[in-house]
Length: 501
Ligand code: FAD
Picture 1 (cartoon, rainbow, N blue to C red):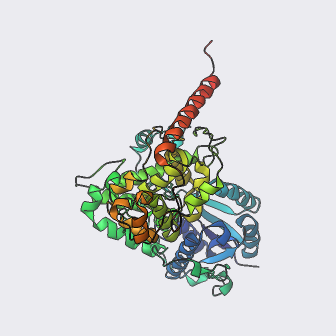
Picture 2: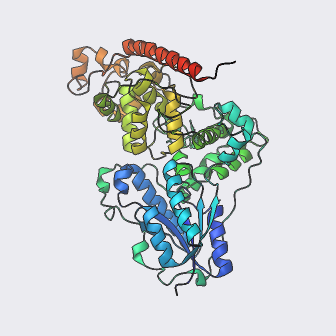
Picture 3: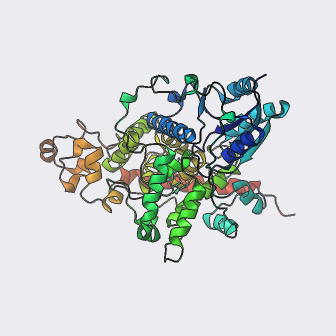
């Protein structure tokens, strides 16, 4: 008879610190002298499901997690396959009696969890689920709002105002030898290498943000030590096009759960305490609250990542245009600021929030009139910090489909970048074909006389694309289309409202 086991299933909680579900599993294994198996399930097609930069970040994070678990006399067991199919088999083989995991709101995980939980119920496996990817329990927030999602940030803040946020917990218990299985050293469970995943790492550039809890805590501490910077932080005053990031770049770590959002919250509270500091929505705490806001909205809205069937999303007649989408995604629109941002995203996997504003507005209501859903899919592939609810929520905001309705406030692909980078250093770095352009033309190379283009070694239409659209003209046409779509949506809504008797 195989000795009974306890499993902790890591998903978006790739850390030891502040991991209540993991601590529950460790205590259960210790108290009952069961085997402990902390697992992660990787899909064999992972390289086709997530972009290369994110895959590298994930593998680094798993290696770091494994190393940290080994310090507790345990390890990470990697399983390969589709979780809903492979877990029941493994649970049987390991004689699993207890499963702990983190609560998730992504519909793909919810569906998977239903299958696993049903199996557990039928096979007497005790399941413990903990909210630990957000500061607040978003379902409780919706409940407090009488079952509706808060549609504004201020409403969300008012709902959580009096909620006490528990201190993050420590997980330090070193496991007894009795909790190790006989196959502890089995290499089959090791974190896969790129070649085992059939992924060619040489296609990636140098790694700018290394994955893992160790790096996440280091990064958090560096930023929290800059007390004045934290207290003065105001998002609109940070730069979308500085060469070094002007915000924390904690997002990839929070999204993968290498960093606990609750720990970040408490560290910010400590720094702010007793000091004059900026306030939400612009403060650093305010940024974390945006995350909570979108998680809450995503948890209570059907089809949150789609336009059709999504009750909070304005229906806008976007046009399918693969040529525009490709040019945008590859940084070949002929607008240097937009192209530099998209190339930075492709190379490094992270771009500043206001840079995301620029390119998302450009793709949708501003210029190309392509659906936000198409843009969100490109971001899903390229972002290190890809997060289901934050991506969909922010795309809806930028396309003025939900949460934000001043659709006529459009970002200029020429003027916006100049505010923080007159010389165009950011463009020169990420669009190197333009690097010798005089500052006068760096944002508008099509305006440079042919002789200047030739001297700079980059002729527009030959070495760098011509503008895909004329922003000054197209954005005005698009505003008329937005106005018509808003009008139609309003009429449809009023028709749906029950008539007073
Ligand atoms: P900081 O300014 O240092 O903020 C600290 C933390 O607050 C971030 O790490 C993040 O967790 C949170 N945060 C900051 N801004 C936002 C915001 N607007 N919404 C929600 N949370 C926020 N963020 C993601 O993490 N994943 C995504 O998939 C994602 N997709 C986006 C798509 C679009 C179109 C836009 C406009 C924004 C998107 N964001 C997304 C939000 C935001 O741009 C990033 O969280 C932020 O730029 C990350 O950089 P940072 O860690 O330096 O942020």
